Image 1 (spheres, rainbow, N blue to C red):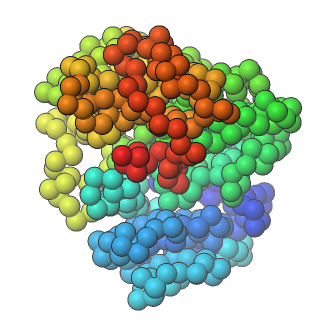
Image 2: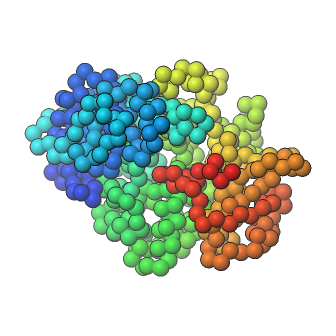
Image 3: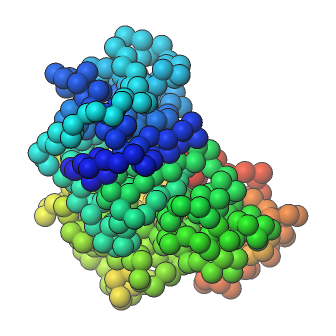
Length: 474
């Protein structure tokens, strides 16, 4: 997996973070120094703080051909202990400024130097089939599992995105995503470096810094829906935020569905329509709206080159592509993971005959192949009164009401209906009357999809990527 930016490095900044910048030449030298220290290692962990040393450590591990495990610095003690016992890293790469928890004390520490001189030669490459990294799942259905991603899978997926987004070495990407997820690390760091471009990490997200980056040299912004919601609000108040968004070549949203209301607000303020894409740790990116394609609110586009996708019913049979019938999303292709670390049974259970991977997501296919996601099968498929209802549909309808700022929908047990639809709502100003919200959904969708109960809350629980932790609402 070549990183073009480091093959013929120059002295202009290649990676920039709030602490400073590294040129491609400096980054290559720093990574080369790490690679030499990792000789003979089988697997290493990376304490994935948003610092230049973290990037030097990760790229150094790639150069050494040693798979690395990005560790979320906010992991609890039990989860961290599980990951370390499962992955058994030989060392942990961590910035000198990082305070490591006791669980890592028994592992040798390597502190990558964020500047490594400028005289290093080209970084070595390794076979495509060799593992590049092991990313652990969020553990929503059991202990976290280590997803083994090969160098070739990552390279093929990034090249498919380059085609979809007309992404080249002329682009500078801005983002503020964490470096322990596919979105922030694979797309947000390895993507620009593979294509010969530049990455500007903003540190903590705020609309002003994102807009300033786009008003400067950045051409692309990667974010999650909560970030774009904040950008929409800020752009309506501040012409400078709107102008920054207007200057972007491409605004990309992922990790969760972007509400149609925020699509429309950003377009009104800046003239930009956001590109949505869909993926997960095991599959990398599956679909995307193309740079020159229709940017349709609520849809995540068509499958990327090299990816096959289908939507199936409970028996595993494809459902009609009528934009209405909901089923489980399954995928196969060239950018799939190799399996779960130390878990052959879980790996086998994840695939159907023919190599189809069940994502656990629910969606509907439009006749033109665009995919519309409606939620997770484990939490977002509601069976009420004999109907199958996607929670995402109800949430999107609620968000079109001016009195709703945020919404999360679940099905709760009901003696009569099987499950009743319940909505947790963060009000936009004074809370609307619950009956008004219920009738709003009944009019926007169909009556059987209306919530039977509205619960107002001050905030929805979210993870580091902005996804709502619905299990905490039950």
